[in-house]
Length: 74
Length: 259
Image (tube, rainbow over the protein chains, first blue to last red):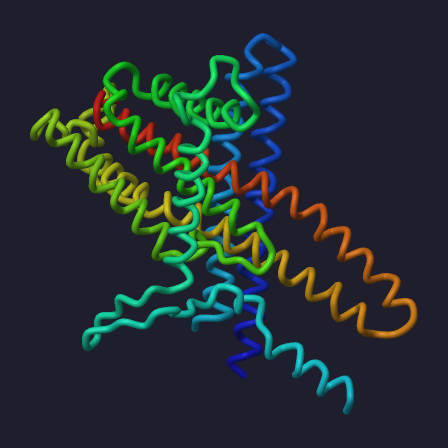
């Protein structure tokens, strides 16, 4: 019974990754737009884009961690 | 009957088994364990390989026109120097050795974990949390050392209406403390999730290969996905080292120049 509940809980926790996916798309979409406006800043903007991507992905991984916690720890 | 047994057999090997710690030289005093585990071995390997590489390449101070290995090391050095200089400015040069060590340790630990059947030290929360908590405490101490009690003014951003001050300070405090944890969790989660994903997919490929007929040929699909994922994982390994380092520089900058 608890095993099935764990599986359901882990599945529900994975829904949060949708928001993170949208967020990462927004980060790189803005990067492409801004490089199209001002290609000379590509290097700096790429650094900021990668930083933004990593911070957004961290949220996605927090959600994944919750899923793993529910599945394997509790 | 047969397929149920087979399922049970496959479920016995969980994808999290690759993260088990094996003590190679057990050593404990009562409840305190100081064993030399495979985690310690791979940490030694990461630092040892980098030190060996560095000293072998810079014999006689290196050549004026760099060879490939010297060029690689010069790129890493230049990269970390530009990071520190850009984020912290001239006051940051005294923290450069620590940040360089941090960057190369995380980079080499992550990359060594990419080798099949090896062990990723940074895929354990305790390792990454130790690093990030130590950095958090160090940055706070540096902030108090430079600014004294005025460091608390960091918690109230300039230009905020004074009415909101109580709520803002609490929220800023929570956010500040969360930084220390999130730095470690980010690295840990990336490494663990990446390796678990590769393990699960390659488990699919292997079990499909052992079945008959169409599935045996279709096992090429998860195999190709694992192949593509390996590139992504190497990219993520380098990226996570970069992000850890740049966030450390940003937190140091916040402590040295308040806002």
